[in-house]
Image 1 (cartoon, one colour):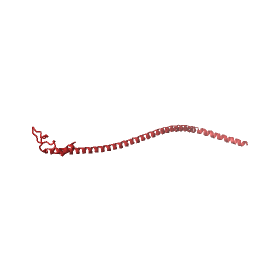
Image 2 (image 1 turned 90 degrees about the horizontal axis):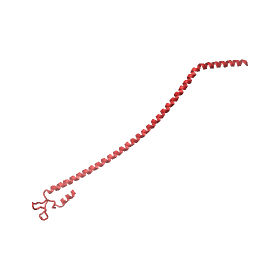
Image 3 (image 1 turned 135 degrees about the vertical axis):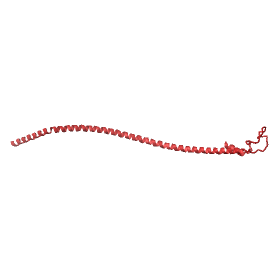
Image 4 (image 1 turned 90 degrees about the vertical axis):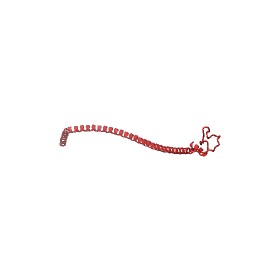
Length: 167
């Protein structure tokens, strides 16, 4: 709208928007007056102010567009970084869950192996106790059995001598 006002001011130098002399009784710009229209001396200041407003508006608009573009680029970068971080953290969570499952499985296997080893050690301990008792029995009865064997061998020798003499 400012551009249109500025264009109108430039296109019509003697238009009614330019203030002419006036008195109490005469408005100065009335249509019945046929005096030559001239630019008001202060009109150039108004035109330069309007030009300054237009220039400031363009600068403000350019700054706003540049700021919006910078904000959009920053937002896009932020979203890309956020998506990468989300993907990375999701992958880490998946890896940790997989590692946790593997650890739980290994722990379960280790517990079952421990139970089997404890049971096997119990059986070996019982077998060692049985073998120790058997060995103690053999050691305790060794001399009695040795004497019985010696007596048996002597009886066999006598039987053999008797049989050899009878033939």
